[in-house]
Image (cartoon, rainbow, N blue to C red; front, side, top):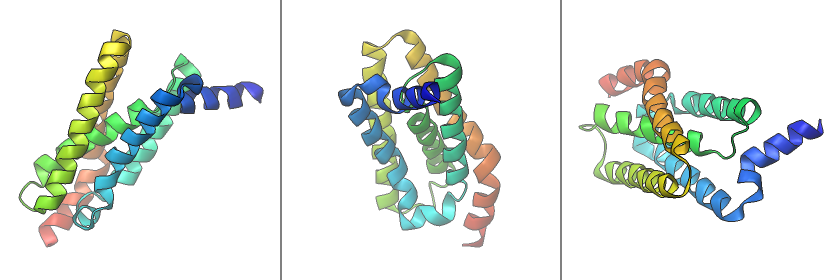
Length: 152
């Protein structure tokens, strides 16, 4: 039981590193915020499924690979946002588009920062998670989204 708690604590807090934890939870908030905009609620209905899958994958990395942090989650969400912005670029309100672009930009800048201070495997994991977000949205969210945007 102690091993589970230790792994969860280490995974959720980067082994207790306050600075990196604050950056990562801020990025998670930035990546989630666009999904709460009124226009996005009808377009991106599958986002909670993608979020749940991302957290499961991140948790598996903690227990199987000894990874730390939540960067897989915010990269998955950013990947999803890229596809949402691309697929629905004509139906999104300008304010929503700017929020999505700001969110994606923040994640990309963070990926560059982490690419400079962490080993290459971190950058590879971030890129793979970004692509996973696109893929998961295609599988879990786009069918619902297409019917929602076609009917509006």
